[in-house]
Length: 383
Ligand SMILES: Cc1cc2nc3c(=O)[nH]c(=O)nc-3n(C[C@H](O)[C@H](O)[C@H](O)COP(=O)(O)O)c2cc1C
Ligand SMILES: *[C@@H]1O[C@H](CO)[C@@H](O)[C@H](O)[C@H]1NC(C)=O
Ligand SMILES: *[C@@H]1O[C@H](CO)[C@@H](O)[C@H](O)[C@H]1NC(C)=O
Ligand SMILES: *[C@@H]1O[C@H](CO)[C@@H](O)[C@H](O)[C@H]1NC(C)=O
Ligand SMILES: *[C@@H]1O[C@H](CO)[C@@H](O)[C@H](O)[C@H]1NC(C)=O
Ligand SMILES: *[C@@H]1O[C@H](CO)[C@@H](O)[C@H](O)[C@H]1NC(C)=O
Ligand SMILES: *[C@@H]1O[C@H](CO)[C@@H](O)[C@H](O)[C@H]1NC(C)=O
Ligand SMILES: *[C@@H]1O[C@H](CO)[C@@H](O)[C@H](O)[C@H]1NC(C)=O
Image (cartoon, rainbow, N blue to C red):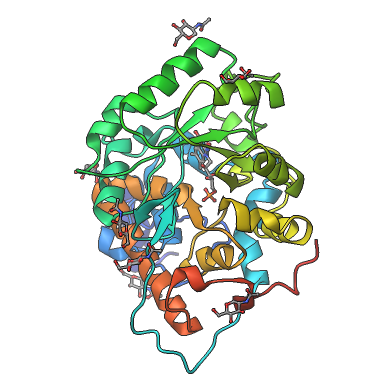
């Protein structure tokens, strides 16, 4: 026979099914996040979140299954998605003592424009799935923090709405896809320039198809992209003639393509595997940067290189910078933080900036532009 106490607790647990939420943490690092007082579907207090992984778990607790899958998904088995997160643990940081690091400088230039940090908000579609303010709060948080934001062409808000949402004098770039519809490209490039964006990140890694994203397909995610399937070097040359804005090819995954872009006179390339969302099985940015350095080191001297993928901690950004990136993109973290709107994105940027600045000091690096390969040991990684 059950004791009255047990019966009482059984009844009370039946009356409060929403409480005592269980969240699968997906193997993310355990830093003591306590979700036991969270309620499914209810935003936990922003003050409880202390790093980008916390924001992801909170997002998982709040977003619909479909929207969470849409932001979170990788392609196929998500080997590349997982490798992006895991690769940083295989790189050792070299820290040096006996250095004055009192005058810490994290600011840098990207295509000649001044920013307070060498990390930026990468293009990511459909910010409106997190919060009605959508890309507007990403633009505002970035503008107030003095960092670069590069909205996606598949944004919830229009090109003009995002431009208008920025703060006075804010410099933003804009992402573009290679649409099969040429008039659409011409129209969008003209609007991007007219709205005041200063450069184009041209995504070149998913011509025709986005990749098979099983996790989001389960929710009937759309697969037709409208991207061109016959985009080649001739169409790239034709594309460059359509705008006077600088163009940065995004989604470079090999040293050969990096050299092609260098020889074609691009001012920069963006090394990325699209957050593991396109071709599953490709290398991480750490490996791609190492491969470029091994086979075509001139790329780093002659053009700017940006990189992204799985950057969740300030130290991850420092690793990519040390391997030759000038600036590092964050894809999912700002999208998850944007559930709280501008305040969430601002907190994420601030926490990430603190991690980076603190780790720089501890490594004996005063200025981000001093970071080079002497600060990382990549012996654990074979290409
Ligand atoms: C929800 C989502 C939407 C994205 N949409 C775009 C896009 O429209 N254009 C693009 O070039 N990249 C897009 N990306 C890729 C990001 O720009 C970036 O390369 C990637 O997210 C970096 O990896 P991370 O999420 O691990 O930081 C998207 C990524 C996510 C997570
Ligand atoms: C988590 O929080 C709950 C209540 O908010 C508390 O009872 C519990 O002790 C906490 N767990 C840990 C491991 O701190
Ligand atoms: C960073 O800011 C300082 C102070 O304004 C300036 O002297 C320095 O040139 C800047 N660094 C870069 C790389 O722009
Ligand atoms: C960028 O920073 C440099 C050095 O701090 C400064 O000389 C320059 O005027 C700044 N440019 C803009 C556009 O603010
Ligand atoms: C191509 O793009 C133009 C400009 O955006 C648009 O007016 C037109 O409807 C598009 N054509 C097709 C077939 O989608
Ligand atoms: C691009 O423009 C240049 C100069 O106007 C021209 O010589 C070249 O043929 C154009 N290229 C393409 C592919 O349209
Ligand atoms: C959504 O974003 C807006 C604008 O930043 C903010 O005021 C609002 O609180 C956010 N919504 C939630 C639920 O936090
Ligand atoms: C890296 O930077 C350090 C200190 O700034 C410098 O002494 C060293 O020569 C540089 N090493 C390489 C490989 O460029």
